[in-house]
Image (cartoon, rainbow, N blue to C red; front, side, top):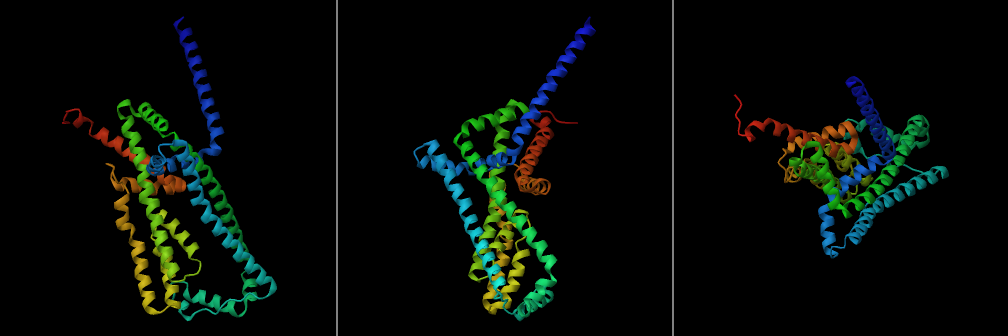
Length: 357
């Protein structure tokens, strides 16, 4: 009789567990198309909440008005530069295409200083010079390479458009979340309390919040500062395509690679077209910008946290290598939580007043 009841209980438990797993999997499939946008929305909401709180205070604590205004401002900051950049690219492409069709497209002669560029100077000077004298021959010779490059460029443009659309949804989600920040924070504490223990719910909710803000300031913030400073220097020196180079520098800085990888070639170009004194000043400026993360990261990364900066930085870099840019935040949070749990386990005897033999 006991065996029969036990069998029934096992079957009933298995059915319940199976239905629960099915429900969870079904919910996951429904949410999956929005998962990345939702994660970015959470990250953006946590990172900008201090600014949102100030905006809300200025507006007399009118939560919905502050949320709506925040969404409009954030969308304007995202869409306006993208609009002007895309218009510039389209206008330039159309102009080049029209001039090529009319047979009036000309390439200016290559400056002699191009030969002195590191690694690629000689070959680049040769192609540039030949393009200046006989563009049609160069286009015909490198037709397959140009076609492949144009396909990659079109795919990159499409991916950028998709990324902008993703961030539009993420900003809207973040606006909803910051408007309901108290409830979201309470749910976060309850989740950590259920997973780790009621006594640690608040502590780990704050740890996740502070980690997101630390990475946003110490990684993305520093990368943005380096990209802006690089853009200013290139604008002053009238470097062609400074917007494209600044975007590449931003990506490199996020990936924790030095901007000098791009600025080095820009410095070579500046030396080939500018006088010695301004070129030397720009070279020094480029070195300062590239090395600025050495003193900027300690100011922003890990600020106000007990978790060591090295743990957060390793989590951010490892997470990005594993999962892309979203991994910057997820990796830092996971490694910080793991570190804190490990340290609490390691110090458990000391906290309990016991001393291991």
